[in-house]
View 1: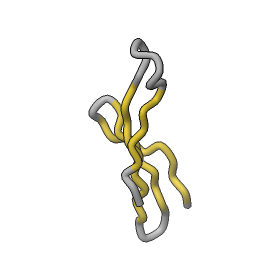
View 2: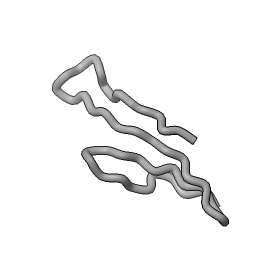
View 3: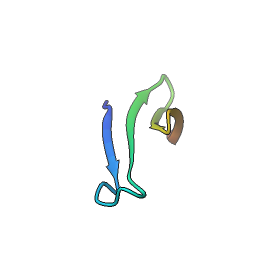
View 4: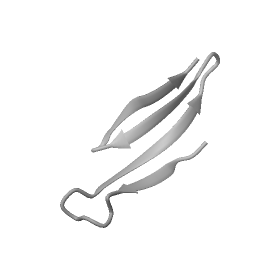
Length: 47
């Protein structure tokens, strides 16, 4: 499910960062992938 947009540290423009998370369901596991800085990576893998 998702994507879930995130606005980290929105109150401080010096370190503010936008990202998104998405849950992907595979045959044998679930993966939460994160988009940060224009790149996707697996943040969490559930067996």
